[in-house]
Image (cartoon, rainbow, N blue to C red; front, side):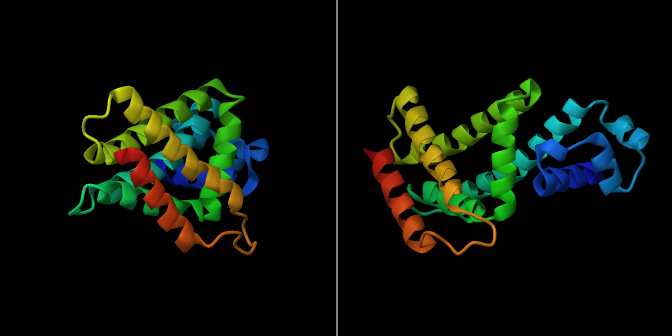
Length: 187
Protein backbone atom coordinates (compact mmCIF):
# COMPACT_ATOMS: atom_id res chain seq x y z
CA UNK A 1 0.00 0.00 0.00
CA UNK A 2 2.82 2.41 0.87
CA UNK A 3 4.37 1.81 -2.59
CA UNK A 4 1.09 2.68 -4.30
CA UNK A 5 0.83 5.85 -2.24
CA UNK A 6 4.41 6.84 -3.10
CA UNK A 7 3.79 6.22 -6.82
CA UNK A 8 0.72 8.44 -6.68
CA UNK A 9 2.58 11.05 -4.60
CA UNK A 10 5.49 11.08 -7.03
CA UNK A 11 3.14 11.62 -9.96
CA UNK A 12 1.27 14.35 -8.08
CA UNK A 13 4.50 16.18 -7.24
CA UNK A 14 5.75 15.96 -10.81
CA UNK A 15 2.43 16.68 -12.53
CA UNK A 16 1.12 19.44 -10.23
CA UNK A 17 4.14 20.70 -8.28
CA UNK A 18 4.60 21.43 -4.62
CA UNK A 19 2.04 24.24 -4.61
CA UNK A 20 -0.78 21.76 -5.28
CA UNK A 21 0.73 18.76 -3.49
CA UNK A 22 -1.60 17.70 -0.68
CA UNK A 23 -2.62 14.66 1.33
CA UNK A 24 -6.11 14.82 -0.14
CA UNK A 25 -4.78 15.09 -3.69
CA UNK A 26 -2.45 12.13 -3.22
CA UNK A 27 -5.22 10.07 -1.59
CA UNK A 28 -7.52 10.80 -4.53
CA UNK A 29 -4.80 9.98 -7.05
CA UNK A 30 -4.11 6.70 -5.22
CA UNK A 31 -7.82 5.88 -5.18
CA UNK A 32 -8.13 5.73 -1.40
CA UNK A 33 -9.57 7.66 1.49
CA UNK A 34 -7.57 10.30 3.31
CA UNK A 35 -7.70 8.22 6.50
CA UNK A 36 -6.17 5.23 4.69
CA UNK A 37 -3.32 7.40 3.42
CA UNK A 38 -2.81 8.88 6.90
CA UNK A 39 -2.56 5.40 8.36
CA UNK A 40 0.64 4.97 6.31
CA UNK A 41 1.87 8.59 6.35
CA UNK A 42 0.84 10.52 9.45
CA UNK A 43 1.58 14.01 8.17
CA UNK A 44 2.12 16.08 5.07
CA UNK A 45 5.83 16.44 5.86
CA UNK A 46 6.24 12.70 6.33
CA UNK A 47 4.62 11.98 2.95
CA UNK A 48 6.61 14.74 1.26
CA UNK A 49 9.93 13.48 2.66
CA UNK A 50 9.09 9.88 1.71
CA UNK A 51 8.15 10.99 -1.82
CA UNK A 52 11.39 12.92 -2.24
CA UNK A 53 13.41 10.00 -0.85
CA UNK A 54 11.66 7.66 -3.28
CA UNK A 55 12.57 9.93 -6.20
CA UNK A 56 16.17 10.29 -5.03
CA UNK A 57 16.61 6.58 -4.34
CA UNK A 58 15.27 5.65 -7.76
CA UNK A 59 17.84 7.89 -9.45
CA UNK A 60 20.70 6.96 -7.12
CA UNK A 61 20.06 3.22 -7.37
CA UNK A 62 20.40 3.53 -11.15
CA UNK A 63 23.56 5.60 -10.74
CA UNK A 64 25.05 2.99 -8.43
CA UNK A 65 24.24 0.25 -10.93
CA UNK A 66 25.94 2.30 -13.67
CA UNK A 67 29.14 2.48 -11.62
CA UNK A 68 29.06 -1.25 -10.95
CA UNK A 69 28.78 -2.22 -14.62
CA UNK A 70 31.68 -4.38 -15.65
CA UNK A 71 34.65 -2.23 -16.48
CA UNK A 72 38.09 -2.87 -17.84
CA UNK A 73 39.58 0.59 -17.43
CA UNK A 74 39.74 2.83 -14.35
CA UNK A 75 37.79 5.58 -16.15
CA UNK A 76 34.82 3.31 -16.94
CA UNK A 77 32.91 3.78 -13.65
CA UNK A 78 33.03 7.58 -14.00
CA UNK A 79 32.13 7.43 -17.70
CA UNK A 80 29.22 5.10 -16.97
CA UNK A 81 27.99 7.33 -14.14
CA UNK A 82 28.10 10.44 -16.31
CA UNK A 83 26.41 8.69 -19.26
CA UNK A 84 23.63 7.45 -16.94
CA UNK A 85 23.24 10.87 -15.32
CA UNK A 86 23.02 12.68 -18.65
CA UNK A 87 20.42 10.20 -19.89
CA UNK A 88 18.38 10.96 -16.77
CA UNK A 89 18.85 14.73 -17.17
CA UNK A 90 17.10 14.50 -20.55
CA UNK A 91 14.00 13.06 -18.85
CA UNK A 92 11.34 15.75 -18.38
CA UNK A 93 9.96 13.92 -15.32
CA UNK A 94 13.35 13.93 -13.62
CA UNK A 95 13.90 17.58 -14.49
CA UNK A 96 10.59 18.59 -12.91
CA UNK A 97 11.12 16.34 -9.87
CA UNK A 98 14.61 17.72 -9.28
CA UNK A 99 13.54 21.33 -9.68
CA UNK A 100 10.58 20.87 -7.32
CA UNK A 101 12.81 19.08 -4.80
CA UNK A 102 15.43 21.84 -4.85
CA UNK A 103 12.75 24.47 -4.30
CA UNK A 104 11.19 22.46 -1.48
CA UNK A 105 14.54 22.04 0.25
CA UNK A 106 14.74 25.81 0.63
CA UNK A 107 11.36 26.04 2.34
CA UNK A 108 10.86 22.84 4.32
CA UNK A 109 13.29 21.48 6.94
CA UNK A 110 12.37 17.82 6.40
CA UNK A 111 12.70 18.23 2.62
CA UNK A 112 16.10 19.88 3.18
CA UNK A 113 17.28 16.95 5.34
CA UNK A 114 16.06 14.49 2.71
CA UNK A 115 17.86 16.34 -0.09
CA UNK A 116 21.05 16.64 1.96
CA UNK A 117 21.06 12.88 2.61
CA UNK A 118 20.44 12.22 -1.08
CA UNK A 119 23.22 14.57 -2.12
CA UNK A 120 25.62 12.92 0.32
CA UNK A 121 24.95 9.63 -1.44
CA UNK A 122 25.23 11.35 -4.85
CA UNK A 123 28.59 12.81 -3.86
CA UNK A 124 29.78 9.45 -2.52
CA UNK A 125 28.95 7.81 -5.87
CA UNK A 126 31.01 10.36 -7.78
CA UNK A 127 33.84 9.97 -5.27
CA UNK A 128 33.77 6.18 -5.74
CA UNK A 129 33.86 6.63 -9.51
CA UNK A 130 36.77 9.09 -9.35
CA UNK A 131 38.90 7.16 -6.84
CA UNK A 132 40.22 4.54 -9.33
CA UNK A 133 41.56 7.38 -11.52
CA UNK A 134 43.49 9.03 -8.72
CA UNK A 135 43.78 6.70 -5.70
CA UNK A 136 46.15 9.00 -3.78
CA UNK A 137 43.96 12.06 -4.05
CA UNK A 138 43.35 13.54 -0.57
CA UNK A 139 39.76 13.17 0.68
CA UNK A 140 39.03 16.91 0.53
CA UNK A 141 40.22 17.11 -3.09
CA UNK A 142 38.29 13.98 -4.02
CA UNK A 143 35.13 15.43 -2.50
CA UNK A 144 35.64 18.80 -4.25
CA UNK A 145 36.16 17.20 -7.64
CA UNK A 146 33.13 14.97 -7.14
CA UNK A 147 31.05 18.03 -6.23
CA UNK A 148 32.23 19.93 -9.31
CA UNK A 149 31.39 17.07 -11.66
CA UNK A 150 28.03 16.45 -9.99
CA UNK A 151 27.17 20.15 -10.14
CA UNK A 152 28.06 20.23 -13.82
CA UNK A 153 25.59 17.42 -14.47
CA UNK A 154 22.90 19.07 -12.32
CA UNK A 155 23.40 22.38 -14.10
CA UNK A 156 22.55 20.79 -17.42
CA UNK A 157 18.95 20.53 -16.21
CA UNK A 158 18.70 24.18 -17.25
CA UNK A 159 18.97 23.10 -20.88
CA UNK A 160 16.04 20.70 -20.87
CA UNK A 161 12.43 21.65 -21.40
CA UNK A 162 9.56 19.25 -21.94
CA UNK A 163 8.34 19.34 -25.51
CA UNK A 164 11.01 21.82 -26.65
CA UNK A 165 13.59 21.04 -29.31
CA UNK A 166 16.97 20.15 -27.80
CA UNK A 167 19.27 23.12 -27.22
CA UNK A 168 22.39 20.94 -27.17
CA UNK A 169 23.87 18.07 -29.11
CA UNK A 170 23.74 15.48 -26.33
CA UNK A 171 26.20 13.07 -27.99
CA UNK A 172 28.88 15.76 -28.12
CA UNK A 173 27.94 16.93 -24.64
CA UNK A 174 28.25 13.42 -23.16
CA UNK A 175 31.64 12.87 -24.77
CA UNK A 176 32.87 16.28 -23.61
CA UNK A 177 31.57 15.80 -20.06
CA UNK A 178 33.22 12.40 -19.74
CA UNK A 179 36.54 13.58 -21.19
CA UNK A 180 36.69 16.70 -19.01
CA UNK A 181 35.64 14.79 -15.86
CA UNK A 182 38.36 12.18 -16.47
CA UNK A 183 40.98 14.91 -16.93
CA UNK A 184 39.82 16.71 -13.78
CA UNK A 185 39.78 13.46 -11.80
CA UNK A 186 43.10 12.09 -12.96
CA UNK A 187 45.06 15.34 -12.69
